Length: 76
Image 1 (cartoon, rainbow, N blue to C red):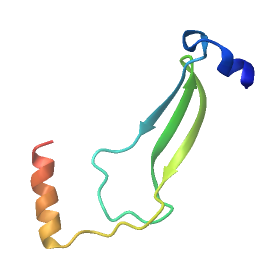
Image 2 (image 1 turned 135 degrees about the horizontal axis):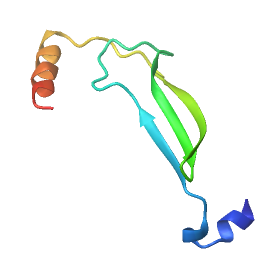
Image 3 (image 1 turned 180 degrees about the vertical axis):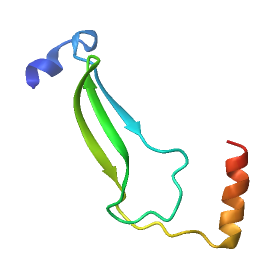
Image 4 (image 1 turned 90 degrees about the horizontal axis):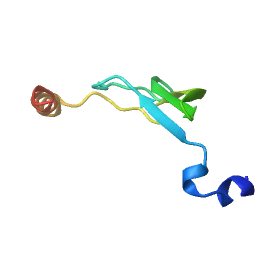
C-alpha cells in the first residue's frame, strides 16, 4: 500500500464508486431494508458491488409533511 501512495496522483489507479438508488426514495423505509447499491470499479473494470441498506427506520410523514413533499416532487 505504501508503494501505491508514493506514486504521483496521475500514475495511481483510478478507483471510482457509484451509488445507484431509486429516485425518489419514498418512506416508509425500514431498518435493514435495501435502498440501493454501491458499485466500485478500478480503472473502468468492476471490482465489487454491495447492497446499500437503511441504518434506521424512516416513518411516513404526517399529512402536512406529505403535502410538502408532493409539492417538492412536482418541481424535480
